[in-house]
Length: 424
Image (tube, rainbow, N blue to C red):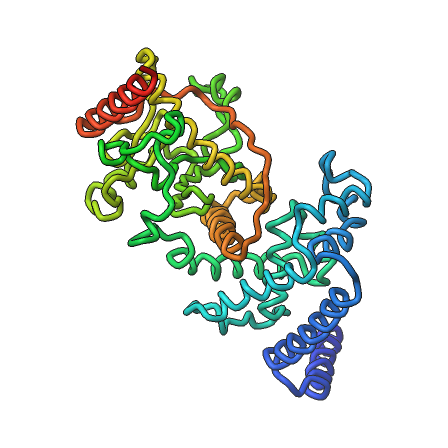
């Protein structure tokens, strides 16, 4: 009984002290602390950026270098000397002024958009200003750094970094229709490359029916962490041996792209690795909306994509000199998409592997990188990524409709006749 009296008296004293020393509500205390922490963080970060010379991205990578050594296995290229990094930064990275311009440019894009995130605030969480949010997020996208190391450099909790980054991705995703758009009008027919460069400066090919290339269609894989629940395969499953040799289809995303001759993305579709569709939705849309393809234009794609009147694909097997000439004419354009993909992954190294098993969030990150790829091209900022051929199974002939087969045959005939007439 005495113990109960003591416990009751203790609770009464605690309640009295709480009323005496916490006149504000819990929400009010969190809001005041939130504002104070935010002001300190922004002032400290701004001082760091302004006081240190050199490109912003290089500064941030130097700030996180020491803790990163404990938390991440660095690649061979990242273990080069500081002088080598500085040489690469001069040729491949933006200058200090240009990087500040990039942050400001993206900040202005987000501020001028009609995004519902513009005025959002997370109660009880420290939040950076929009410009510093852009800087933090570009750092995460451009380097394969852990949230822990970035949180150390920005002096924010790891969970807060996570929230800020995905909030940024959601905001950038609202710019998709503005930044990844199909060309129309004069833009659609201006400076289009000819289908074949193998015939020199042969004139009149377009009048005879040989189209110009509006864009190159293709795809790439973005590796992601396998979702929980799909990491173990039951030994009784008949396909267990095959699955042990092949990556689980949910361990990557398919990124379907169309780029123009400048490397700008004009179409983007992201799907799960188990989705084996090859642009059938795009093919159907091009048929339903014929004005998307101006007269005398086409898309080119590798084997495995659907052949139609709008999409030209190579012959799967050799068709003699005629078919080989046609195939070589198409293959000359595929490097455009390969280079665009290489540039995308070089600029945003996080796409090399997304350590997240949530499909929707991984999709948001990939779409953010695609949108910002075009934003940087608009600014005149170009990177030169190294093209790497992706390993994969040999794909067979994609679905071909009758109109597509007829157009392929007609163009192959025209190209071969032009070559034959030019050689005689």
